[in-house]
Image (tube, rainbow, N blue to C red; front, side):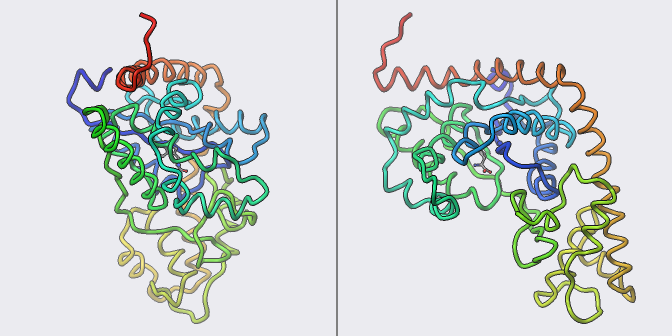
Length: 336
Ligand code: TRP
């Protein structure tokens, strides 16, 4: 509703509450989300329904849902400005999804690379939810008439599908959905796994030494950096042949807000030990205020519940308008 009162563009994005958030989420998503709050009308969701496509332990999922919310706030997402909500608290996501299911081709979903990858890594549970995952994501986005969707490179294909569904529906009926644009942050720097610096750092990596979580203690951060895999040779520079050192330089550059070049210059003449020590300290400086704020927020469950209760109401009001239009166009009979 607020977005109808002002001319701000609308943003919607979300993260699944499976696993703990990492330094990669902060640099790749949450810090952009934070910066976008003033300029756009932002809806930031916790995609709990999407998490059900992989087996979850009920108690853990509930806990992670609140943890994800606390982490959004700890990273600077302001609930007084942005709408923070839990996907399953707004029934219209599932309702719109059902309708969109009927406007999406079986072939379109089967060619999604994420579906193919997840079918491989979870071959014992290739459920229909996993197949329809991107259609629920389309419903998430289209309900809010979002202009922009900040996502990582890996979600581009889902955005493309969302655009196709929206255009198809608009063409078949009349203008109903805003056709959203993906917003892929320019921050090119990919953060790699600390023990295997040729693969991406991930929140679900079985080896915890590979990942810096936003909840890690200072000691854990320093130790993980100290034990990170480096390369042969002794010079500190960015190079494809030096993935470990390149990754440490990248981490330092993110945590210090310096360019990669400036960081390289800082460490001319230093050895790997000096670099690791400095990177560990910088990351501690970068993450510890967020971690402290996260643990403070976690103690205040009433406050968190109050935010998502308001979020459920606000998001439902906006989403219902779109759903109602869609229901009318496809011929569902209203009761009043
Ligand atoms: N699929 C997204 C991810 O795993 C999470 C997500 C669900 C999402 N719904 C969304 C992201 C809507 C952007 C918009 O990263």
